[in-house]
Length: 223
Length: 207
Image (cartoon, rainbow over all chains, first blue to last red; front, side, top):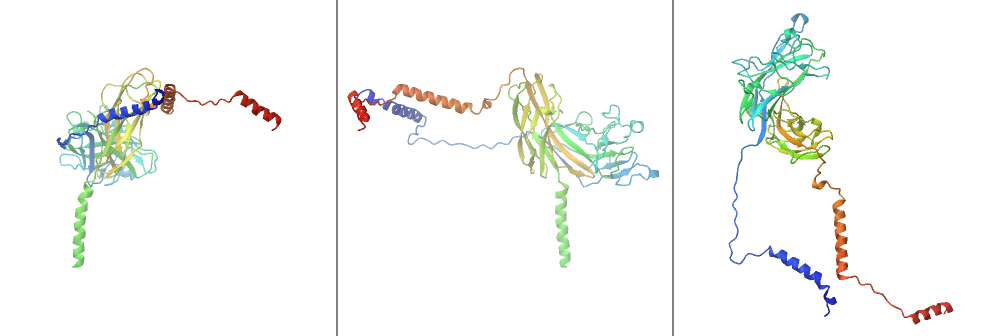
């Protein structure tokens, strides 16, 4: 047999060699050897999410007051009047009613709150949020800057323990003072807070709608 | 008598239903750990950020969507919301979770440095409290760094034809090596000169 005639055997030999090397990694266990056993461990960890829930009790915005009887725009029990009508969802004070429960269901966080502009049912001109106090984000333009002006309104959330100089909600999320009246708005996991809402309407409204929608949003944020 | 029994049954059902309605809640959650880009981003580049984990912690179905808004205190340049492209909103039942993808698109004129903003998840459901809507959201940090330099694309960002092309070239090279090693047999049949002349003569004669 010449060298030329066995050349075709070379690729076959290479394939066999590679197959053999690969087989080295799959050595069969010798007879009688012990079999591997595994143990399943169950582990529970603490939550690693930042989360919140809000649950309102069955209550209605009511206890409305203010407005001008001479103009036939005085508030009724459940309807906001003009000017400077005021309504409550809940009732402030030591023996008050606080129908909204906010619970921090995730890790310790700061709780922020914000309000939206009030939107009329005809999607016309809304009311923008304004604030009172020493350093308002948007100053109320009504009487002595203590009440909302035209197309402005004021939203304040309250709790059993309240902050006296609180200027109201803004449309940008800010610390919810009722979660830390002395300092900040820190809430540990599981912390709940009961709150109510106070709404003061504008001195006058450009839009004639009688149905308005406002939204209040609570949010846990990193400390 | 039957009417009274029906009334008692109905009242019992209502008693059971009222607490369930009273406990209705809305809730959302987001991963507590910050969303971070691995490595640095470069002006002009696009990067897939780690998908953000969101969960519905309320009692009713809701659609959860993402927006970008700076809320956290801390050092870092503000991130224009247009730089971050979140994935579509997801509809989740109570207790369900999902991951929403995020893409960072850095403009050519972006300044180098550390950037910080927040990813905010918001639920679509809002409970009515009196005539006010009560809503929830949750936030986590988003951090990345921009460095000067060329865009370092992902390994998978090479043109789609490149990998098959490399494969074809390697295949041809291997075939060439085999051919050179073992040779190619070409069969050549030689015809004697006199036999060729005889064939030519026949064609000339027309025989």
